[in-house]
Length: 296
Image (cartoon, rainbow, N blue to C red; front, side, top):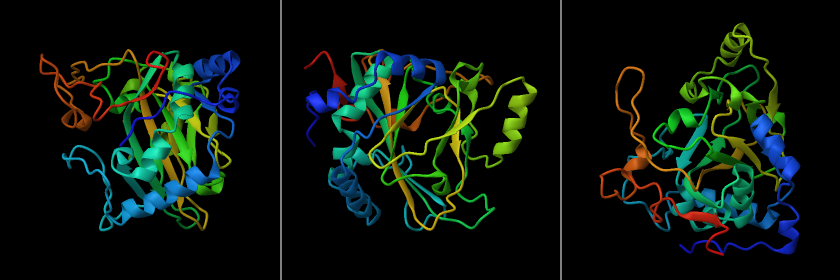
């Protein structure tokens, strides 16, 4: 698949975050864009997601077990398929749409943005008061511990207007500045209230901000920002794509947990190795450049 051209139109340049927006992101750990994506791009992505769910792959990855890849036989209220932008033409167009990474570059104050991973996320509707489809409070960095940088960030892209009934992404304002959020691996814990109470007992102020977006808007959150989501109580599927991006300074680092066990993440198996045997997080086949102020 072709890489993106590192150019924006005059209209798109006007949609980039201002210095005040960047300061807001640095203080709060999240940012919501203006409407930056055309309807046709998102409608095409919906068609691409349907093709992907039918098992169609334009450029299948050779390694199959290093990332999440929901199958129809899987029983889950959340479908999670990773690295779809490398395997599906329509989702590639969305994931590689230049203004998304250009905004990420501004927010993280870097000259170059690379893909780190992506996820096609479909949340099924459920009945009122059910906990089906809850995503527990977690941080992305907790699952990316072999990344050297703390500046990675994620763009969350709903394919439709997304209000609270659909169970959108929810961030805890300013939590990227809290201590030890790099250890927060609670993605599969649906007890949001219990963890919130622990935060309060630690003296934390909790301000939850749902990413309620209009079609064409994109939210961005810092890799240390605590986030999760509630169930989808609507009558529709909640379809979205998350694009995880790495700043130019990121590279692999060996990491051991508190038990002294060396940690590896699945993405390491997808890329080439450096001469020292470490995974190459700049491998263009897996972690291509999405935006650059250097190569323009």
